[in-house]
Length: 80
Image 1 (cartoon, rainbow, N blue to C red):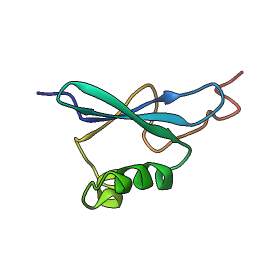
Image 2 (image 1 turned 180 degrees about the vertical axis):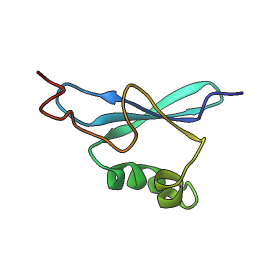
Image 3 (image 1 turned 60 degrees about the horizontal axis):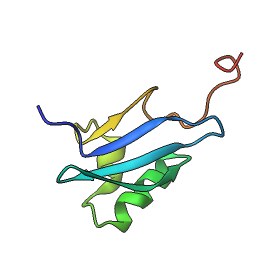
């Protein structure tokens, strides 16, 4: 199975998750998402059809790395 073309990286120390799209083996950073709304907007800007369904549904196109999907900041318990 090929890797998902949209990668949502682990939560950064300052919060948010870097979003990358992989096309023909080349990664392009779309931005840092601080919410699902940010991720949806990044995908909308590059003309991905139905980005809200893609993000909020159970999609194999998006790989969430280093943490739970749809979480963009560490909880206080995790940082202790």
